Image 1 (cartoon, rainbow, N blue to C red):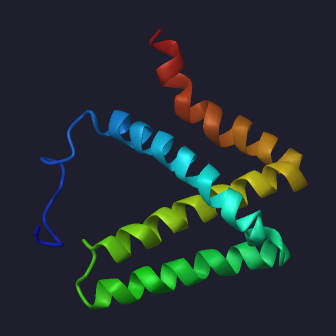
Image 2 (spheres, rainbow, N blue to C red):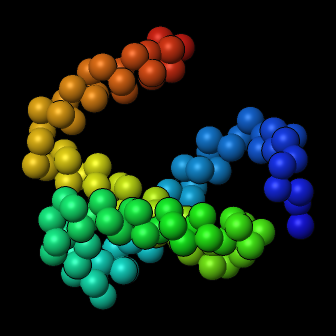
Image 3 (tube, rainbow, N blue to C red):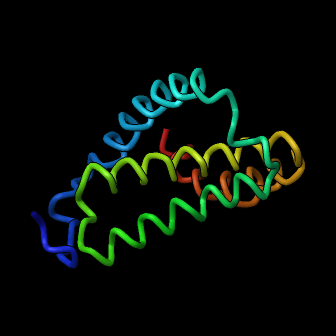
Length: 120
């Protein structure tokens, strides 16, 4: 097991962006399968409910960190859930406040990817 405070740059190579993209494809399929089972249950308590789900996942991860079990199947499952809940919240914002989504695209996203677009 890796030291929790070790610099990971030597392990996370320049291909880490591609690796994250590959994981996101796996998570898309996993999310679709879970939605068949749960049928948007994350939304039944509104925005506050989604926010609380995020908070519960943060608490669970924080508790695992206190027991030094950061590299465990339980931690990984909580991290995947956290990632999906965060994306669900973003998708909900996009749907209920489309102007906020557009503002983010213009003011945050476009400036961040400008250099990538210019390099083509």
